[in-house]
Length: 304
Image 1 (spheres, rainbow, N blue to C red):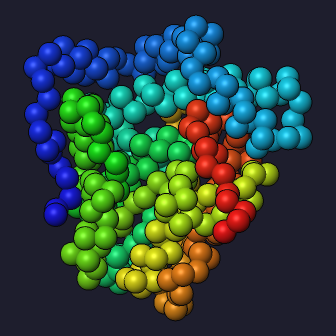
Image 2: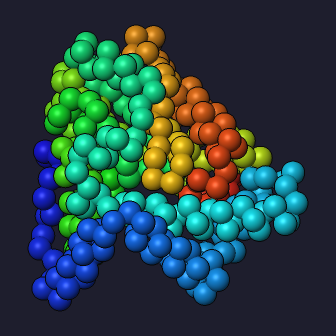
Image 3: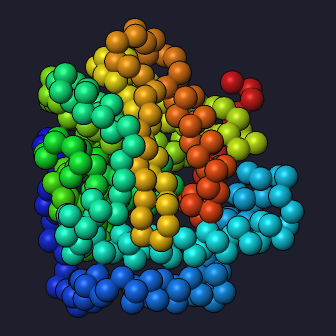
């Protein structure tokens, strides 16, 4: 199956006004959009109290050294950041490529350039930190056109599947449905490509996860990167997109595996290294992580 570039099915006609509204909002200038983000922040934090219990529980468990007042302030800083990310993602619908590149600085992306020049298939592991939707879209502009793919989970709603697909692919990236990851790598194993995965989701018991202490908690991680790197002998990079100021980010690349050292497919050295990098980056900018996600919903079965 080739990477997805168009929706697999049309959306119902009654979503058309929603599309017009979203595209109209996306065309608003940045100051107006950030004013809208302030409104969204107020609604999420004070009216809807969006996932407030989940957010506070995650923050308290992750930062036991912080006082309750600090946790409360941090939760509101998260709401504000999350609201700004929402309008920044929406802006992708109309943002000129040159403007996106001007808003994302790259550090150590030469590592990816070198691997691509060698004709390697590269895994790039990211997370829901900073503005995660700008990783794939800006990376597709910075690296070789057409050589960047992103693994994603298709949405059930046909309109939002269509709209997000449009946002994520308009700078030249391709999308690969999660279930097609292995097939995609087999098809492109001898090509110079980067395959991007957001690897911080909660892995369930059926996924045979790697368990490690992460932010003071027993945490499960998917181990697909270790298995794929061992099977395809491909290098692996860690990617973090760090917020510099409102609307501007730095995308930092670090090596997790050189693609040369032999790997045991049952080992989890790459996953553990990813966890340590991510933990460090969250601790340095705690408000910029997606705390509304039920990251710790699975508990380790100590009987196994």
